[in-house]
Image (tube, rainbow, N blue to C red):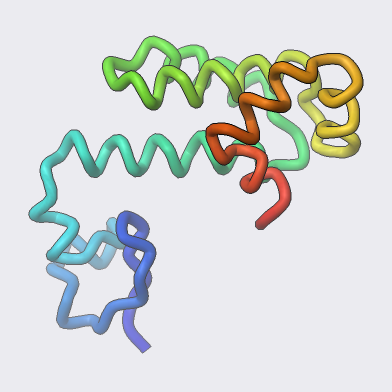
Length: 122
């Protein structure tokens, strides 16, 4: 059966996880990856996860504001876009429809960055 690695997204056998890796759900291969790369992947997953939620809460908005101040440029960009979306339409229902009507530019940014796919798939 094995475990799921949340960094590489693969199901791996138990032997591919160290003792600490089991609880963190990170395989040995991904543990050897540079820390900055791992953090970037985790933060991107977090940002994509916000669009999957039915409601982006105030706590989530506060977290996105912290992510906008990140050193990593790609994280800044994604967090900024999701923060704008959260401020305009925090609820998922009819989010894309409202953005298409009111903020076409923001909808195009979602499409270019791939964030629009996070909205549809869960």
